[in-house]
Image (cartoon, rainbow, N blue to C red):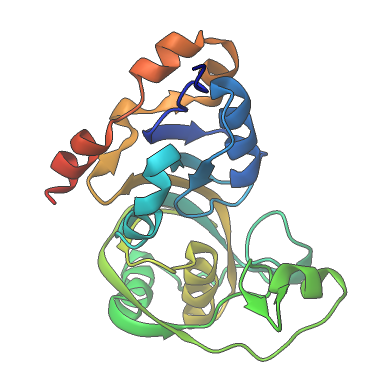
Length: 242
């Protein structure tokens, strides 16, 4: 009796390119592997790049586990300007010159305010649903609604470079953390506003960029080669220390 070929099971680590959504990556993976059962573990905004964990087949059963793990990002915030989306893709709301007294010490003190446990207000431009409607759809209609602050945690942060108005940083944070809001809130703490200019996810749990497939490779490599890049479920379990 003829049986349908079994689709791939496992986890694929993708280095997301800028200018595309996480759902765009999922669609490309579906086409590349000719399979439908595909999901991702943690949305990256279109401007963001870096590690997107994609699960396939039976791998979708551990999607929630992988989404719950801590994340590491490197990014750049620009002081002096706030935007509607809290990143460079939004409309400018306010703009001020960066005060001349803002130095490395004041920036460090502002970052320290957002270390450890604290509550973070999710941005309106987000996929969180209110009454079944994603907030970003309400934001497109010019609406602002009450949101509930979320309890988050920053495990580690590092100011990598200061070249005002830009500040390069690294942050290790819990799930549900919005780096856009982190940049915005630090700007508010400094009194001059800020928005997120660049963002790259470098790690999620035990997974990093060292074994990623690029979007271009997804579009050009033979499927047999792509299957070899797929992490099996036993390997994923071993890497997670589970």
